[in-house]
Image (cartoon, rainbow, N blue to C red; front, side, top):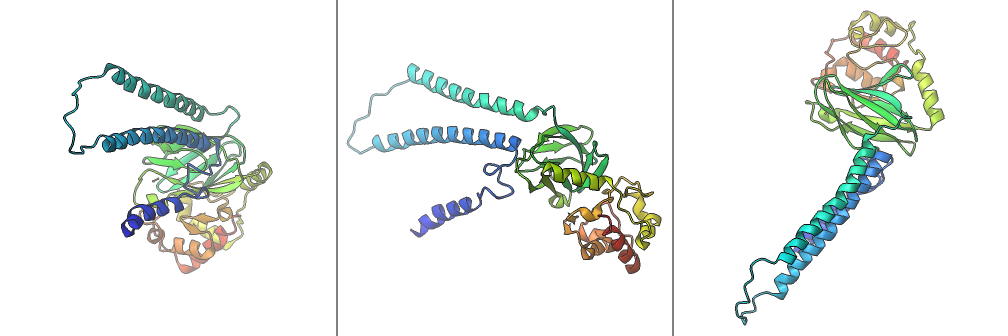
Amino acid sequence: MRLLGSVVILPLVLLLVSCKAADPQNTLLGTHGHVAADIAKLSWGVFWAAAVVFVLVEGMLLYILVRYRDRGDRELPVQVHGHTKLEITWTIVPTLLLAGVAVPTLFTLIHIDTIPKDSMTINVTAHQWWWEFQYPDGKFTTADEMHIPVNRNIHLILHSNDVIHGFWVPKLAGKTEVIPNHDNEMWIDATEANTYSAQCTEFCGEEHALMRFEVIAQPQAEFNSWMVGQQAQAADLGHPGAQTFLKGPCVACHAIGGTAAVGNVGPNLTHFASRAWFEEMDNNPDDVAKWLHNPQAVKPGNLMPNYNLSDQDIQSLVGFLEGLK
Ligand code: CUA
């Protein structure tokens, strides 16, 4: 019984508890996008076809092993060589089965590969180790949080700024490689207003594991007002931190709409304070100060050097950045 418990039941329990439909990484149950749902449907179809074949083949094997086992009282049975009918059968049946799997596979491939004509376009750029989202219609840029309207087809053009990354929102669509000098395209949609976790799926350097992002699907009206907010300028140039920012090294890499800062190496900070988190930390004054104090200690290897900023500069920068709503 103990053996049965450890070998069969325990792994089964572990397997089952890891399969909740609500889990953000579960792509087989509880999907919220048409592409992900299509892929899940195909996976289940192939799984059940394979399960039927498995049970039939293994069942026959077990039956024959038991039924014709050597009971010690038999003579050598008649020896046969070749069985044309049987050989034709076991060639034709798998061929039909594979053809049966190929047809829905091809239809699924064509469906997920055909970008719907009415799509809204977002340009996605992968950087070591963050995501940049450009909204050509709204002419603004964000980082690590991709907002989309719910029930709207979104056409994504995927660029890489450095190495190969992988774009994956498990609940909404399959993954697509993001390759330097070759733009890949895909489409996604979200059928439910929600925040979906997403991540880079290609090992892209030491902080690959921290290259997560979120897709925030909102009702159209809410999305529209978010767009309007993103297009507005938020910088308070009268804040003492504005001068620290604009006269310091920050402008070499970062842009803030409505100011002279137009760097495009690091994330666009126009509405920095409207994002819930940054660099895997909550977007609050303490964590922003921690980051500015030494970015290399938080995310070693990232492109932002430690500028050894004074505590006073850090405080005024934090105040200025947290005002960028
Ligand atoms: Cu980008 Cu892993």
